[in-house]
Length: 304
Image (spheres, rainbow, N blue to C red):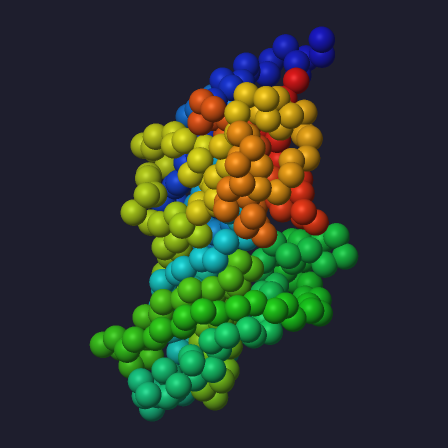
């Protein structure tokens, strides 16, 4: 056995989910490292990166929970924050350097509300240079640190709700956004400033929900409890199966649509999306998906 094998700490083997209220000033990866250290396991990952200065819901999977992160990462998300009109920055948020200023002191609430309404629905959005998007194999933020700016393709995202509210400062507005996964709130704030004839940047971004997981469930990174793995399933329908079908599931076998393990059809299995499959002891076995009249395995958590 090599040196790395001898020195590597044993894995605790725990599985579950953790919802962290990410503090400002640290990366999402920093949070993952702290969870690893606290639980004594290397198998930890997160769904949906938050910028270092952003706070709020960061969903973390532990052990087998890492296999389920894909089902939560694409969920809709909600955010709060502040739009600062009249100032553009290199990162589109308060962490960047000022790149331009605009006289927008005459801005009125009716104008801002009307402009924000224009961003509701399916829109095209260009990812910021300071982001984790890859272009030709390089992450944009890596290029940005080297002073390189490249052309980025616009992406289609959906904004379900974009509320803005005036504050005592005529150039600062509170925002509340509900949107599809992959939406950059920094870009939304900057584009709102441009639409109003000037510029803007984002401040105090806070993610308040990821799918069905809300900020009320979030815990401090230094004082958290491991939650059941089922938390990562969200509102996914559940299919309970008997011992015989559970054996088939453990081998990744397909199941007929509507199979309940006892021969009776179940409405959950007829859902066109994903289905969580549980055994007689209510232990999560796998996630399946209905395709062409069958339930096909997507992620199998148990097996031989």
